[in-house]
Length: 180
Image (cartoon, rainbow, N blue to C red; front, side, top):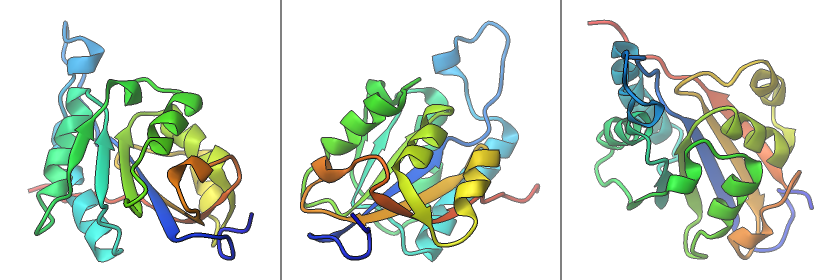
């Protein structure tokens, strides 16, 4: 189905890879904090989403510390942050798991923000995008770095309609903060 001519309301899945994390010795992967660059980049991601008119109706975030902190810093840039659900299924998830999470989104949500990890997020974007408005698909194939944001859009009556190739990749952003 063409994402521009399908049935139902326009829906957007905004995929945000967590900001740059630190690798402290002896800290389990799930507990890794953001690095200095990550603490600078996460608010920039929030500002970029606001400027692109992509503030979500709902966010679903990995339970990992680096993803949670990315959410906290990004959403602090918005006047009214949306509700967030922390979902352990997003941590270290592969495409089928991520699709299950997204398909469980309430029908009233038109824009969903999914905050998680690679390689799952990169593979999800490549799986869902049937085409892109520009060279964004090639950009994702080359690299989906920390703090990267991909915006996918399609028409559907429910999130259950989310299927491989159904979406148009509207664009990719990689916001970066400045050193202070």
